Image (cartoon, rainbow, N blue to C red; front, top):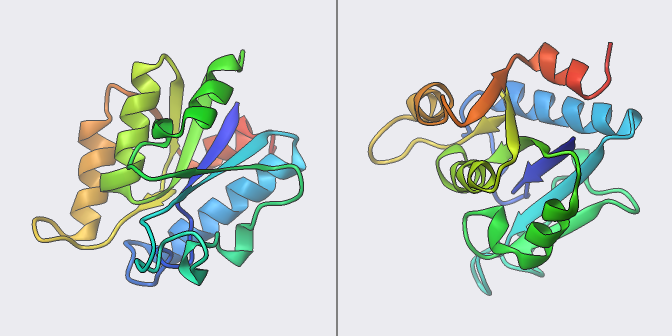
Length: 174
């Protein structure tokens, strides 16, 4: 199994996210559990380009301090919503025997959605732990409705939705 941590960047991790404290706490705890139990953690950063505040070199581009990558952990950069737009990441994941991807991060209705669908199409078993993806209010739905819509409806047949406790167990925590 690989824990795929998407877009946990300083410009995006914000108190306006749906269920911010729970989301942040659970994501941090899963990263720590994976590290403790020898589960590979891969980080993906979104590069929105120069001047965006979310471009390479911007402070907002950096992964949040609470889970910043440790020595030896892989970090890939993407410029489109799906992580699979990064050819090196796609090739790396394709070579893995274990096809289980636990996906956490931001934003539910953009990069998480695109990555979940791309992973599923490529034959990965996608695991989505409860409370470990989030987003902001948008013009069509509030953030809570958006998160529920994707987690409980859109991805229903694409992912193995697990409780947070089950996710910890999958990462070797007892």
